[in-house]
Amino acid sequence: MHPGAMGAVLAGEASVPVMWASEGRSHQTAERAGAYGLVDQGSLFDLVASSEILISVCPPHAAVDVARQVERVGFDGIYVDANAIAPATVREIATRFERFVDGGIIGPPPTEAGLTRMYLAGEDAAAVAALWSGSKLDARVLGREIGSASALKVAYAGWTKGSTALLLAVRAYAEANGLGDELIAEWDVSIPGLADRASGTASRIGRKAWRFEGEMAEIAAAMEAVGLPGGFHDAAREIYHRLSDLKGTERSSVEDVNRKILRP
Ligand SMILES: NC(=O)c1ccc[n+]([C@@H]2O[C@H](COP(=O)([O-])OP(=O)(O)OC[C@H]3O[C@@H](n4cnc5c(N)ncnc54)[C@H](OP(=O)(O)O)[C@@H]3O)[C@@H](O)[C@H]2O)c1
Image (cartoon, rainbow, N blue to C red; front, side):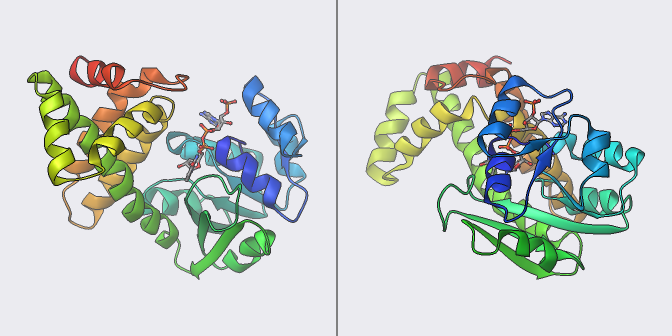
């Protein structure tokens, strides 16, 4: 539930038949589901009734809502939440199910071996990992503690997506002062590669930023839960929020990104 860019490829790599529910989902999601061989059960009710394992791979801000919908239907199989959410959120979701596995995905959709890991934690983690045995997804069991797979993902994405937001912000700051070219020239001398990372990031961020906003809020909360400041990732959340209406833009320019960040 529900096959996005990541979920559809994970489903295609699984060694068992995978189903989904088309009710309420977009044409793009239906196309992806068809392309990766998922069998449509129509409604969430029918999907839940005919599944032994449910895997939630949806936008982070929707994870709790998706779990609530399944709880309302009633499910006694293994519920896997593999979304980028805080350990406290995942533990709250876990209270809704008898059998629960916490998951954290690192890497792009697994179209080649060696690109993507799915960390799994919980009593049934090994049974879930076995679904991808011998596939392009490297499914790794972390242990039994619910929240540890999500905590690893928080630490990983806290750096990758947090530093990306900071890079976009300082690039826009230089531009606001009329010093964009001078900053690029200085980076080329003292931090080789950073100018390319900044422009490459700007071009790809438009279509993903809306999804990162919720993830940054989860990371800020996770940081605060262990006594660290949440402010880094709260600021990153605000940067992605300002970019969120670029959703659907295949390639965004540095100018588009600067304009959105500087004039919300
Ligand atoms: N893509 C990656 O490289 C990557 C990497 C690591 C982890 N992940 C994790 O994988 C999860 C999904 O990412 P993705 O890249 O697959 O996202 P995506 O391509 O944007 O797909 C999201 C899917 O969720 C559905 N959806 C949207 N809003 C929803 C809602 N409110 N309730 C239920 N379903 C909803 C969408 O269906 P409709 O279009 O029909 O609304 C779509 O099929 C995230 O938790 C993300 O952190 C992704």
